[in-house]
Image 1 (tube, rainbow, N blue to C red):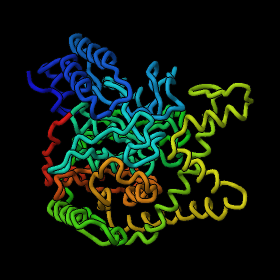
Image 2 (cartoon, rainbow, N blue to C red; image 1 turned 60 degrees about the horizontal axis):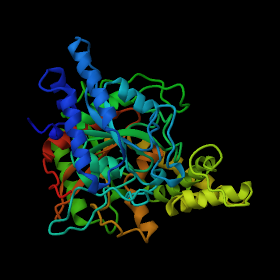
Image 3 (cartoon, helix red, strand yellow; image 1 turned 45 degrees about the horizontal axis):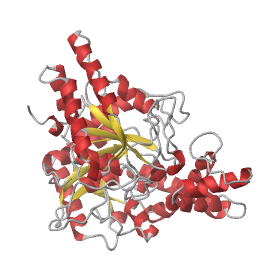
Length: 493
């Protein structure tokens, strides 16, 4: 039989609908691939029975002549930040180890209703805080890629490192991710896959373990722009349980995909040409301009003058919100409880949090608590919010000159595990190109652009106007067709 694990979302969905193979055959092959890839450490929990259960429901619906859903028969990976009824959800933290939700997140429920099945819960940076998946309590997910001539273990990016690694390694055709400051786009770029962060509010945050509530946004990760469009259509939608949810119809992004950019203007922000950016990143960016020109677009230079302040503002706002959100983990109601003998309530709080949170999470809680404290709130948090407004206004002005913006996704290709762990500031710089769009709540996606001189993937980023996921997807499709990125990692696991 054909190796069905090489197929994408549309090919699987349409193949099942046309009777070329069954959903159970698809789920069985992906279950086997997941089981054989333990060395990648992509999954925290595997759920082969759930994948088969959903597959059997799809096959039964087809046999009965019933219509199949948008994701009918497609098995996916679920980032372990989404609460899944009856299946452990940990946010990759010891403090939530063993927590089994009695409810389903809106995004995962939407996907199951669309016919998708769950292969398991994917690894991530603890509470989605990180750019390398190294802050996970369960150890880092590893990239399936290797540098030419080297066996060094590489990062799959973060925080959605398990998702990016699993999709790139053909362990699932697609996976969910979340993006607070680049956590879908950066891992997609370093593993050679596609990932889109939609407009803030497009996908419900209900049932997603919170990091920074004004920034967190769910999105799909897959191997093609078309597959991301299909999956985003299944994930998105208004949810009255989320006060930040957009009350507007979900367009049919898949049906409206069009790589012809005639009449469109693509902005190139001059402030993104940062000193020290590797030449292969700059060359890839220049190549992206040529591809979009070839698709009919006009290239224009734009200015986003407050770009240099975006990253420091983000690393004040996000930790501030995290320190508030993570206060609920106290050992009282659920998750870890560390109660030293003869201790009181305050001792239990302290011991539980000391044992349950990892170093990076503690660092961000401390930063967040500090910038929100009396005497520092105005000096740090209020100033950061003002910068956020200025960053959003920069984009608003830019939309008068262009339809989408083209930039690199990351300042570097995948780096070795352990290379940046001792320097948090160097790690934070991985988000330098991704954070501005997050602060402004804009749709943005990463598309593979080719390989660098070490044989590692590089990504290009498209940023669009609010609610214009279609414009972002179309520009991404234009790049995808011209890049013709067919490379995949050689199997070593």
